[in-house]
Length: 491
Image 1 (cartoon, helix red, strand yellow):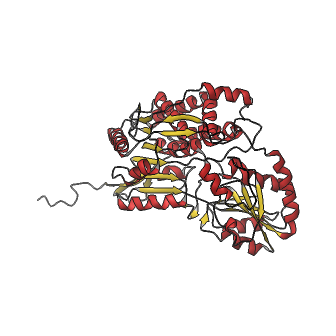
Image 2 (image 1 turned 135 degrees about the horizontal axis):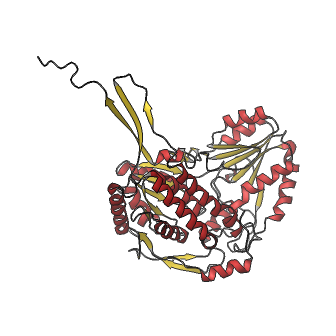
Image 3 (image 1 turned 180 degrees about the vertical axis):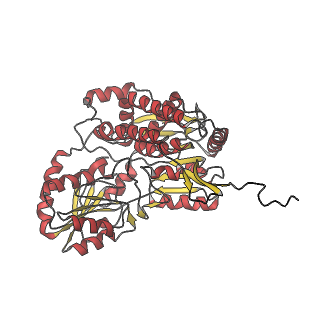
C-alpha cells in the first residue's frame, strides 16, 4: 500500500497543484465551444476550477481527428511491442503524478483520500499496465480446414470508441475503458462526468507526453446533451462504452439504433444482495465484509452491497457486529486520511439519498452510514439508492433468501456467506448476477470479467481478456490452397 501523507500535506498539494482547464483534442489543449463548467468541491462547495465545456462542433472535430488517426494507422498499425512500451511509459508518468491525481480525485468527487491513495490510483495504474502487457500475448486463430484451404480468424481494432464515464470512480473507470481500447489499437474519445472532468484531462496530457499520438486519446468535458448525445448519435463513432445509470444506458442503445448501429457496451446499475445463511461461520469476518461492501465510497458504487438478506437465526448477532465495526468508519473532510467516508457528489444526489431516510438528517453533503430493517416490498429494498444505506431483510430459510435476491431488475454482483461449500456453489449458480463472491465481498480483480445480468449490463464485459473482445471486430480470412491451374481445360 502507498504510504499516506498527513491531512496538512494533502491540503498543501491541493493549493499548489496544476489544474488542466481545457478540452484535449488532437493532442492539443483547446478551449471548447460550449458553456464553461464550474467544478466544485462536494465537501465544501468551493470552486475548484472553471473548465472548458464542449458541444457538437467539438465532438465533430474530435471524431474527425480520431478517424484520421485510426485510418492513417499511427496507432492501430503500430508494432504491438511499440504500443506496449508507450503504454508502460504512460503508467510510469501516472505513477510519478499519483499524489496530485489522488488529491484531484478526492477534491472533485468527495472520495476519501484514503481510498484514492490505497485503491483508485494503484488499480488505475495496474489496469492500464495489465492491458499493455497483454498486447503481444493474445493470439489470433487458425480454423480447422482440409488440406485445400487455410482459414484465419483475426481480431482487428473496432475503430473510434467513445467512452462515457461516471462520477463515482473517475480515474478507475477511465482506466477500465482506455486500457483495453488503446491496447487493441482503437482511437478513443472520453466524455467524463460533468462533476469530475479534471483527472481525465490530466491523464490525457500525460498520455500525450508518453507518446500516444494526436487524435488517439481525446477528452471532451461537457454535459450529456452537449457531448454524450452527439457522440452516441455520431455516424463515424464505431462503439460506445458506457458506465452509469440504467436509464442513461437505455438512451444510448436508442441512439445507436437511430444512427449507425454502433456497438454498445453498458455497465449500469445494481441492487446487490449479500446473503448470510444460518450456517455462516465467523460472523466477525462476515460483518467486516458487509461494512466494506455497503459503505465503501459512501455507497456510491454500482456493486455496493445495498441489501443484506440474513437468516433470522443470526440476524441480531450479525447486526451487532456490523454496528460495532462501523465505529471505525469516520465521516468527514475527504482530504483527512483518518476519514473512511467523504462527501456525496452534489446537492441533488444528497437530496435523493436523504429521501430514503425517515429521520431528520442535518443539511450538508455528509451522510453517516445507516442500517435500516425493511420488508422485501419496501422501496429501499428495491431502488438503487447509491448512498451509505444498508437495507436489511430478514428471511426464514435458504430458498426465501435466494428468491428475494433474484427479485430485482438488476443483476450486477452478489455475495454469499455460508460454511457449506456445496450450498455456496449451488447458490452462486442460482443467482442472476455477473459476479458472485463466496464468503467475501468483492468484484474479482483485473483478470476477471466484470459486468451484469438483466438491466445491469449489456453487450460485453470490462476487465480481463474479455474486455479486449469488445474493442475488436472478428474477421475470417479464407485462403484457397488449390493449384489455380488444376481442373482448367487448356487443350
